[in-house]
Length: 206
Image (tube, rainbow, N blue to C red):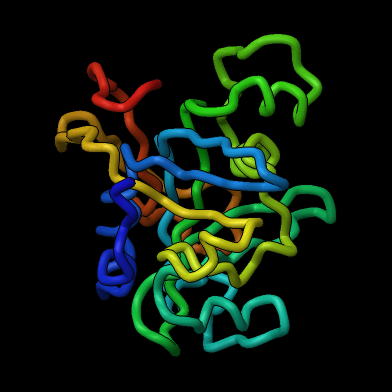
């Protein structure tokens, strides 16, 4: 295991972290079942100055309070009363930056993923969409607040991210505006969404 350390998440540039998460593997251990996928799409949310962020203007609610934790904590929220969306909190305590994981390439535990989604086979867009990511990996909004850096790994449910040594070059990444944040005005146009557009042979077992 090459677990991403706390120092990876507490860096100040959430946009850089969103790009750096591409190619890393997101793991879960839910009810004794381990599943994982390689992160291939992310979105950065830059806290109180970002109109697309839940914490814009310093907003604090019971739901968003987790965003003010130190980097390396899971922020999972319920969208439209249906979908649990998984985010990684970044930066230092009190600075509510976060990265939304929008898509994965399924790796470990695919049979369990199929059962969770009631599918018979893996399709082209099987791991695309933040709601589907959480469903595949068994992530629920009640998991918000879990420590991704090791503290909670011995007491499932657990969520963590590993570096499997997959080399992501700048040519493999596209950047563009985020999805579904038209309400954010000019901030909706910021190139804060990152996606792997070319994937070479990985050193991980995909």
